[in-house]
Image (cartoon, rainbow, N blue to C red; front, side, top):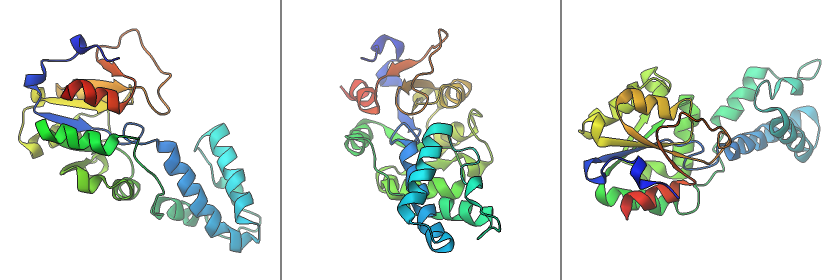
Length: 226
């Protein structure tokens, strides 16, 4: 359970700024959704069953990660260019969903605080994730780091969100998962933060952690709203 002693006085918090990937949904589900789209694209070009391509790519991702994930799919002679595969991946409509309770939790937060979303990554992918998850209907203030050319851990996007909402940085609290991006960015912006232990970075811990830690987004919101 999150230690409330690690948080600032809740009366000081006027805005809660949320990360998206691995904070509100599992980011690897987006990758697997993109892999399915790529398999549909490649199947008629390679005359290989779609499910076999999907299984092979999914295994490669889960074992080795995303780096050069699609390179091995280019046959000799190549049936398409790598850029075409990447475009299919980035432009597909994701089949993803929020963590259980996340939509309700965001609505609970909005009853007592301004709520904003600050998300990092390529614009095309992040905007499609936001739409697929329905966050554009839940969160009125959305900031894309790529639009500002300021990826985390630069604090620029968090500071921009505070100005957009009309509050001081010290009145903001950040909820995110990445201890190398979300937490340092919040610290540089002069904002309190809670780290949720979900997603790919959940096993990374440090003795120097100075922020609140919650097991899930739901737990973090429960502490802030109760």
